[in-house]
Length: 230
Image 1 (cartoon, rainbow, N blue to C red):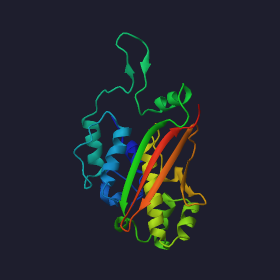
Image 2 (cartoon, helix red, strand yellow):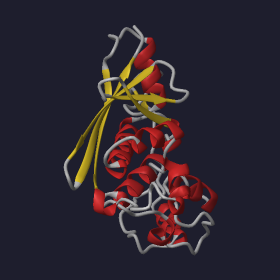
Image 3 (cartoon, one colour):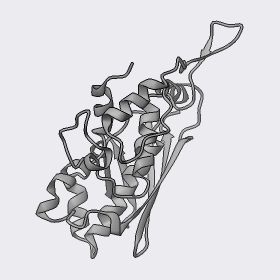
Image 4 (cartoon, rainbow, N blue to C red):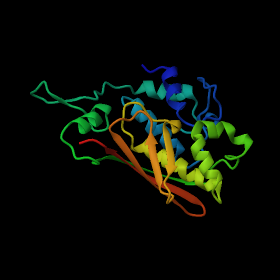
């Protein structure tokens, strides 16, 4: 059985409207559901953290208590390790942290792509006060000082921050390790030509490459996770 504390710890990786999560907290009143894909992101994250549960059936109007009931209602006995029928040897499933480590430590080619991620967001759905004093809570949860300083030098700081946000989301989506990344684990800087550079804390043996693009109304980003050792 899964606990409410487990569910809350997963949801705290998202930018929150309400920090005091409890059983009666409603999803769209607790999480900044800007971006049409946020509900799917919540469902995808829960699927990674609770792979033994069927996550269909909850909406942005669902409370944490209702989501917890769904998690526990369909708890199965799925095993994340795939065993050979006639052997004691086993394989780690693709996407597990052990699979990543195996890909790094065994005979693999440097810069081999392990996973990819993509994200797109509307500038109209992004917090308009992201660079104002009223947006300090959102900024502190999502961006580091270097990212904010870089955006402040641009003609459209909000659009620049939105691009960085998309890059972080894309990296989170492509990371297949056991512990999910948070926005503050990821730092997006830029070289002298304005090309984005991605650094992820405490991820030895992995490299992340990102590309960011903008239109007047949208920003999108693509991320690759590769191994950085032979």
